[in-house]
Image (cartoon, rainbow, N blue to C red):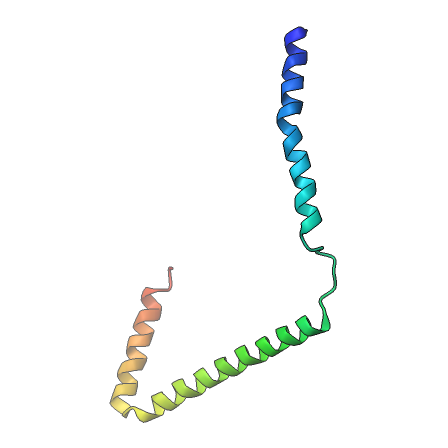
Length: 91
């Protein structure tokens, strides 16, 4: 019985610092339930627009680069693209 109480006491003492540290972490971290500010929402919207514009511009550049190629080169590129898709299908 005496050994049993010692084990419980050692276990409680070993876990005591963990409980005190967890309270400190929550006190300094921002609340997850806080609503997003207008400024942050505007910044997120701006980043989203920039990302969409960049993707659109990239697609235009790809299309333009394809138009500059000769018919034979376009055919070869298409063939290689299909071959790559076939090989990479399982990955």
